[in-house]
Amino acid sequence: KTCCFTPAADIFSLGLIVFEMTANIILPQEGPLYQDLRNANLRPFFESSQSAARLEAASSFLVNVIQQMINPNPKLRLTADELLGLKRMKEAYKMLGSPRKELGDSGAYGALQPLH
Image (tube, rainbow, N blue to C red; front, side):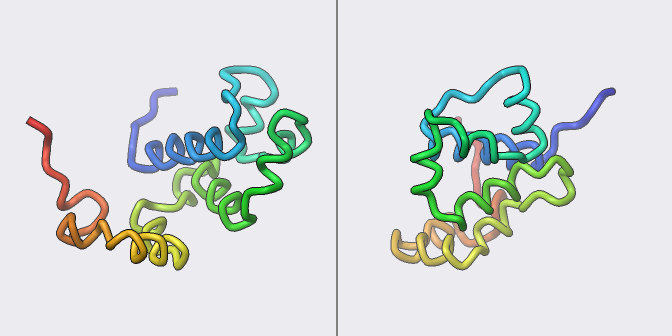
């Protein structure tokens, strides 16, 4: 089956990167744990001695956001604007000086210029 790469695929990838950093693991590239990730099932990683302690220390908010980012249905994944619109994200970038203002506050992609 041929598929298109969309911003939803980017959100999925970012969700996996955030999960990998949170759990401090190298993600599987095949097998049952790989399939669990593709289905947004993080439970086996909470049961693994390698990642359980770090995941238990992570906020339930972060785990929930990750699960929404890796939802198997691309139409149900959070968008970049939805991620940036989350209350905790707004609080974080307000503390950091609001990077959206520096980018012109024209949405997730609008103000970005190509690197030449």
